[in-house]
Image: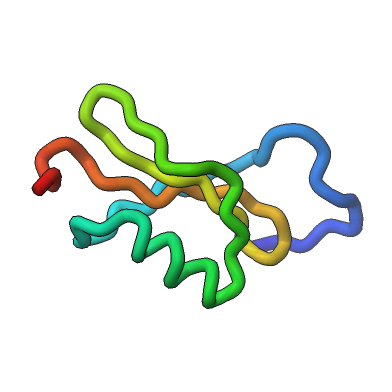
Length: 72
């Protein structure tokens, strides 16, 4: 990772999507919040995927998601 002095402007240059082995997306997002992440969205879904958008302490956005095959 390379740090730059400018603050984030607009979209991230990189966006991570993290696939967790869990059936409880909300609990996983809560755990990440306790570790310092900020929740930027409620749970969303499309085409069977479910995800929540979060940001790390520096404002870099990432999604925690569960793919369709992992649905309970």
